[in-house]
Image 1 (cartoon, one colour):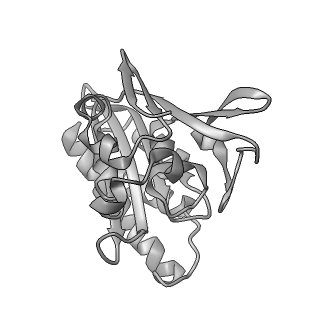
Image 2 (cartoon, rainbow, N blue to C red):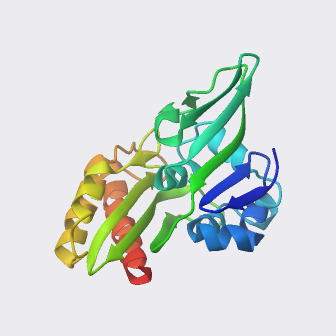
Image 3 (cartoon, rainbow, N blue to C red):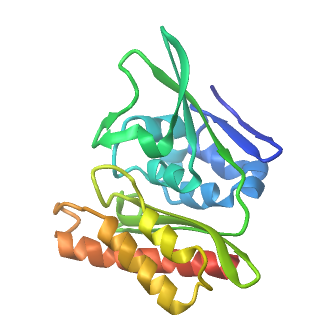
Length: 225
């Protein structure tokens, strides 16, 4: 349940692997650099030395960074219990805040996803160092011949579950990633969000911040693609 394996185009991470280990793995950084970028924005070094990827994704906290990142990566979760083992797609795992597809007698043992290529970005706005996100977004883009051939966009802490932005992806794929396409994708992502007012701000403010963060993430991924 601990360790990182990169086998060809597949990445497997044990649930007890710490965020520090995610950051320090050169193999993981080569296969999926967005994981390191996101991990560096979780809490602070003291927490990252102890906090695990399994703990971050399994409890269904919408403010955690890894659940949204796993939507971006289209990851698969591996669960084990008295009845055996099974897998659940990360995009189908979260049902509501702190409610997931994991049964009470199951544990999450590991995570798998395909290695990435092209542009990537995980952008996060928070009130202070170490805080949860007011809004965060993960983006993956691949470009061939001046056209976007694949994309992935997901949001953190902008609903009671992580949000995979299918409509934003639909806007980006097939486009030249010009400013008009980026603006339309940003709007689609903001429309997919469903934040609630809390100490981080009212709903309108959170949606505004979401737009800023998604645009920044898409533009950063575009520059790397």
